[in-house]
Length: 69
Image (cartoon, rainbow, N blue to C red; front, top):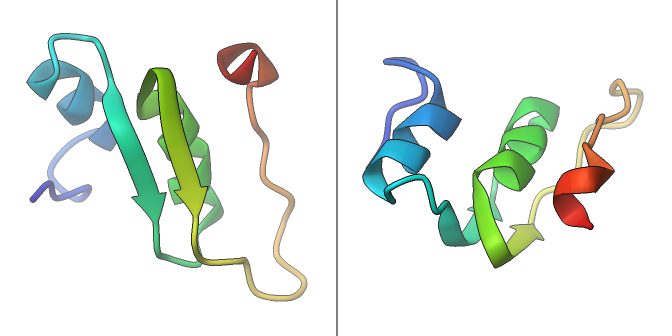
């Protein structure tokens, strides 16, 4: 279990995986920040599941499409 309150969650995942990233990332929180972090912490050929949507009226999520490509 990782605690995002302790430090940067993406850094924690990269440290634990030797900078490879996670094979599977599942976001189950209505958080745009969590969705953005999920893409950044996924490994090459990794899978990201955005299981939770964002509340109506939320700011759009910004994704680095180069990471997806």
